[in-house]
Structures are given as structure tokens and as C-alpha cells.
Length: 278
Image 1 (cartoon, helix red, strand yellow):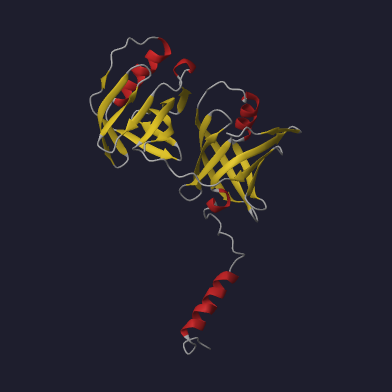
Image 2 (tube, one colour):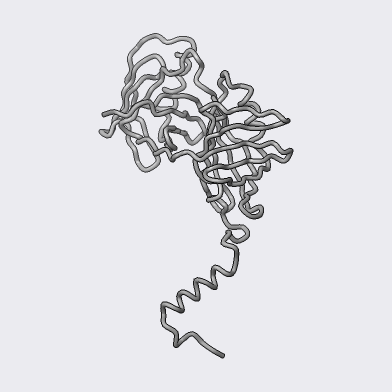
């Protein structure tokens, strides 16, 4: 039998590479992650369902992040309200991926894009086919023939935890998220300094506190605040935030411009980066 032992090493390497390429059509083997087919940050252009096409508001988007093999996470905005989802995926033929979307938490604000939001939320669940199109386009197809058209957007770098003003947008409880009530919206802000301190507004009163960051945990010390009497939604928000920040170590996570703080019992908050300190 002929062997390769007398061939130059470079030619042996070239033949090995050719043999590897010939074993398939360049696609991932069955069961391998299909994340590169759809992972990324996508703006929603439009959706079509029941013969009707709806143009997406500028804020509608889906960000897919690859997880363990066959699993991924998604977060985004239906047009006004934010959402999260778990996504299973597997190859489904050439240049297509079968997704199984399990919605998670979402906010519950009323907004002008309610018709689009309702339809998008209904379509972005269950089994979908994801197919990359020309350029940076992605089409999600539902079992009944509806489609969601998306386009890849430039990656958004994560905002830094410190030296950023964070505006509280929603409160978390287990697997659900509730938007900050309209009268209190935009009032609660949080800044974490690189010197181990935190300050801001709880919804009515200003506060300051020590803040120790260790890995993905942050622990706030005793809160000192002004003493304005707070009632209504502002007072309710302030009491909730005071209890949360004083409850012990919180897990923090930042994706793009969104900060999530979560306590071990599932309580928490989400906040959006407002402006970076100079």
C-alpha cells in the first residue's frame, strides 16, 4: 500500500485539508451549533401575517446570543416593550436554521405601537425557520407562512458599569418584568463610581451608599437619602428600590446599553444607560 511518508510535509498538510473539506459541503455536522447563521443584533424591518404587512417602528429589534450547543438567548424590543426569550436551534437544510422560541420576561408599557407589538409577540414564539438572505438580511418564517424581515445592525458595545448614569426602566419579579409606572418614569437613576460609591435618585429622594463590585456581584452598603415625603407611584418605586438595593449581593449584567440587577429571589431591575460621565 502506498504511504505519504516520503512526501514533503507541506503537501501532506494540503492533502489533509482537502480531505477534510471533501467530507461535507462546508456546513456544520448534525447537532452542531447553528449560531453563526442568526447570531447578532438585528433591526426589524417589517412583518407579514394574514396577508397584511406592518412596518416596524425604529425601536423594534432582536439580539440573538449563542449559548450552549443547540441553545441561544434572545432579547430585544417589540417596538416599545422589552423582552427576553430562550431559543433552541438546529440545522434545517441548506442555509436554514430551525428555531424554537420560548418567550421569557417582558415589560408591560402601553404605547402607540401596540398593534405591531401584539403581532410581533405572537409571531416570535414556537417553531420558526430562520434563513439568511443576500447581504445582512434574515427572514423568520412561522408555521402558518407569516414572515418577519430583519437586517443586521452594527454591534453596540456594552456600556461600562461605572461612570454611567443608569435610568431604571422596569422592575423584575421572578420571570416577569413590569415597567416603571408612568408618573415615576425617568425619575429613578443610579450611578456607580469607580471609587466604590453609588448615588442617584430612588424615585423621589436622592441617595448615596457604598458599593462594592466583585466579579458579577455588587453589594450596596447602608443607603443615606434625603427625607422628602413620597407618595403615589414615586413613593412605591422608592420603597421597592430601597429594599432591593439593601437586600444583599446582587448579580449584575450589561448587554449593550441595558443593565440588569437581580437578587437571589428573582427580584431586580433593568436600567438604560443615559449618559457617560466625562
